[in-house]
Length: 441
Image (cartoon, rainbow, N blue to C red):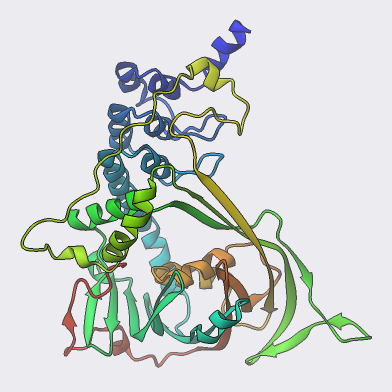
């Protein structure tokens, strides 16, 4: 057994250094070993550094580009674990690095995305959104929307009346989202408020104040993960007819479509709150509402906002490296606070209509959606289209947006056009810039 342990212990040298708090050896090994390697629990070196409170190791790993947007076998990221541990400086460092890495990844993809848009024909397209709920009173007040999308060259414009949809609250308006792929990044994304005649450039970098606001929100709220499980999803042909059953085929707009039943669609939601006290749960509700409305952008009486302090660290773990490294996969020993954990899942019945006649391909649609995913409900559509769908183009789809809300999206109009007005992609001269019109973008 000791021989096995010794052999196992050599498998993850960076993890071992972090577990033992050996910063000196970590500095030597970090340049020659895989900084993103996962151990049997799916933990990267950064996961362990955060969970064990090894602050010097965290900063060293981040300085060498350790990935922040990565999950262990339990489904938690280093940022989630840092919120549980409760050290504010560590949380801030991870938020900054996460945003930096997201920007870098976007810039890496950008040349290929712009080239793909140039190769694609110019077009006009309409997406109709109908939000529905199995809760009768909720269903009555849910919005609907028609997104109008123009594409010319490497530029895309989307006009919508649904500004935001979150936690059963939505904001209506007259909004246009403009992407100019040939512009420099700081000027490529613009959102127009056509009623107020305001525009906002979507910035690539947040201010220190915005970062600290976000840290306050993270420290004051549940650690949440919600995702659509695609492991068990299957597609079967939808049937029609009472006696003589046959495959369902209908016209969706101008397009012939085959309908499929989506089986096994499950929305999984998990949350943790071991970092929150009972007092927090009461007091922070008001703070959360204030922060999410952006009210902390202006200091009261000239004083900066009161920031949430770091928590007292959890009790020191008595688990040794040898005990940790031989633990069965998926049975990670407790390294931080005792988890206060809740999970839920809801199955959805959904359909998708696939048309072989639609002029756009799924790959083209993914490129268009990548541009406009700052809108939360459109990012859900992109996640769905990334699934392995039946043959054709998804002209009509059911997508769960929230545990009680489903959206029905219909591609009701599409036409390739060569007469799209280039002025559609410019900010009108009588609009004024407001950098905080859309605080979530």
